[in-house]
Length: 259
Image (cartoon, rainbow, N blue to C red):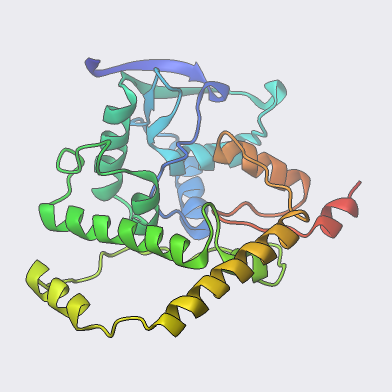
């Protein structure tokens, strides 16, 4: 890994919007940034990891310039952009991504819990306190427990059962919960909870069986598309005349109507 950065002019097509970016960028934020760039130009400081092609900092500015330039991912709309190029491994990239995000815009701690493993990166190096790290670990445990409770490995029963709408955007968690309980208090609360009876266990097993059966019945109706970056997802949504969001579910009839 090389320390420091080097100013370079690269093509927009060389940049990937970081799929782990935890910043919260609203349409209003991007619109405001776009207006500022049109007024004073693009001011430097966009951090780009040459090793992976991922952005570390500057997502909002790049997305705003995309709108100004009319960039749609094609060679015809490609443009030059000045970046601060770094040479980081994946671990350092994630730590720096979190560090820059935490010190600037609001971040979604649900995305932090989902995309950043405590076993893989140093949260202290990313600017988090020990208390922050413990709370993120609790969020990760809650997420894992909710998946297990629903009987799903990759997505929840609620996702399969929710009504079909064009876009579903989860509410970001921009502040960590203020948890002041000691580990002894948590253990005591857990011990005080009533134990499950045999009937409770039987009902729980039946529920899991029913969920698994419904999953098998419903999953045949789904097609999951895995994009390499949010940019690819945005281009796909543009083709469907829809606005890209973090979490989306699209009716198949909508797509068939465009074919």
